[in-house]
Length: 406
Image (cartoon, rainbow, N blue to C red; front, side, top):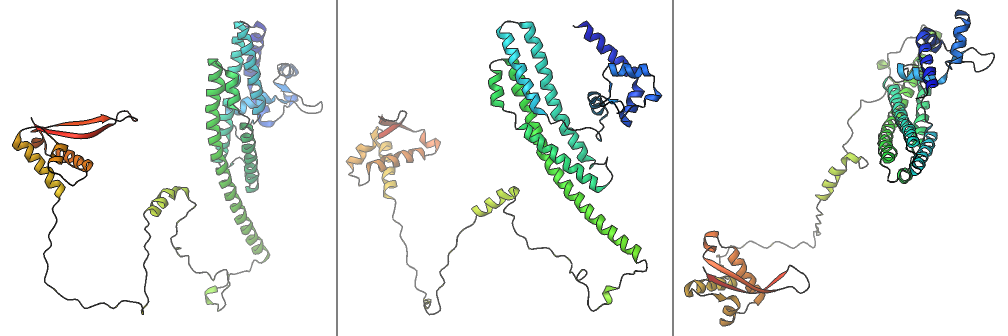
């Protein structure tokens, strides 16, 4: 620990505590009234870099760094400004990371820890700067720039905030995490600081800034609407001052009603889908999928077929052809039961000279066995004869089926 720096820091903090009233008066008034304070006190604060004189003929003022500290601590939104100078911080981070890696390579561990400490401080300063800037913008939006009174001033503050958001987005575009990842390399501490921490802050800030930008545009439209209404009201008041005896005419008794009052009441417009609304995309897609194309060929009156008279006739019996393949499979099962011997399906097929396709016959026998109830299937024992596929492993080609009783 540097003893001189420690003493200087204690002296600065003691001076801030002893002269807190003077500092706060200077903060709110903007300058110091030197006639109300001792020259020794004034000179001591100048030596401690608390007060400074920008020019020789200008009154003493607070240092910008101390004013920024007070604005941050007091959350004084009327005076705080957004710090969008991210480029210099990124350059500093890159330099400190290179110093840290070089010190580690040269086995200067004490220096490397000092560089890592500085790098950590700069990273957290950068993340805090981003979060503070976003928080400042949201606080301005929440009170709708309430620290200024007129609508014109609110519009100017809104436009300034939009410019600051654009500057911040441009500064955020300077983050190149592929380069930072290469810079961190295999160093765990550097990857945690330069990649994980910064990437989390970058994602949060980018998302918040997009919401801030849309809210600022909405507020700007509202402010301009207020301004238009205020202008209309001021015009009416000026008209009343110039013509104090003015009285509105009873327009309902006139035969020629001015167009301003000759408007019908609003009606509900016909419902129509908004094809540009992303939230309705799923519903519109499902409706389109359920559409069916129905084409009807309407014939002209001349080409229409004249309907014939309806004649009642005696109903004819309809005979359904039996499923020969199914019946033959049942006979095969019955033969196995009657004989009590194992019988191959192809042997039965050849003995009875069946006309079916052999593959269809085997498939039908297997399907009939699988379709039996569990209580009946337990009486049979089936054996599949076949070969393994020569090309595709795991595929068994059934060539014959042997069915028997258990």
